[in-house]
Amino acid sequence: MQYEAVIFDMDGLLIDSEPQWQEAGRETLEQYGHKLSDKQYHTSTGLRTEEWIEHWFRHFNIDMINAPAAIDLLVKKAIEKIEKKGKAFAGIDEIFQFFTERNFRMGLATSSPMALVDVVIKKLKLHSTFDTIASAGELPDGKPHPQVYINCAAQLNCPPLHCIAFEDSFHGMIAAKAAMMKCVIIPAAAGFDHPKWNAADLKLRRLSDFREEHLHQLSGGS
Image (cartoon, rainbow, N blue to C red; front, side, top):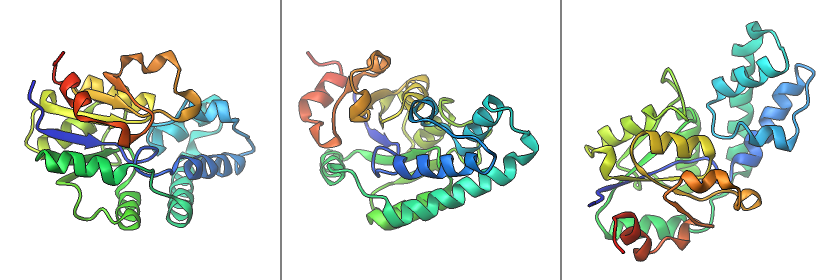
């Protein structure tokens, strides 16, 4: 298989923003009288904000009439926190250079709203990195639904089968695989050995670990 494009997730992969999302989510739920444990939070990593709020509102039996206000509050808090404290993960310059040197088209496929994407692009100085950006923010369904990946591939004018996706979350991995893409998973260190990552085509500890032999492996080489 000859691959032509690479598509990256954003939160938790390019920028270490999960602590800020977790903080914003916890603070939002506390407005409604409920506390979220670390274990609970990590079961919902990768969901869109709308789906995240719906999931926990139903779990805690919070009246869904409050959901729109909670979504707005969570997004506002997250953007403010990420703009102030979010940091790029080590290895992003190396991975972008790797694929640029091999003439890959590059896309970003995220569950986050474009308002946050704009903040991250500016913060990490990625204005000229991606050929296209796809957000699930306005789609009927976010990850693990594959639509955001399918849209990104279409915008890159590349069949999904010829794309490699880089993800950090379970929901993102499922979305990429459902879109018929190869998926490289870079999970958080604490959960690196969890068997749920076995569905990925390749698991690495950091983006900069990706090498030519991995590309050869994904392409079906021995």
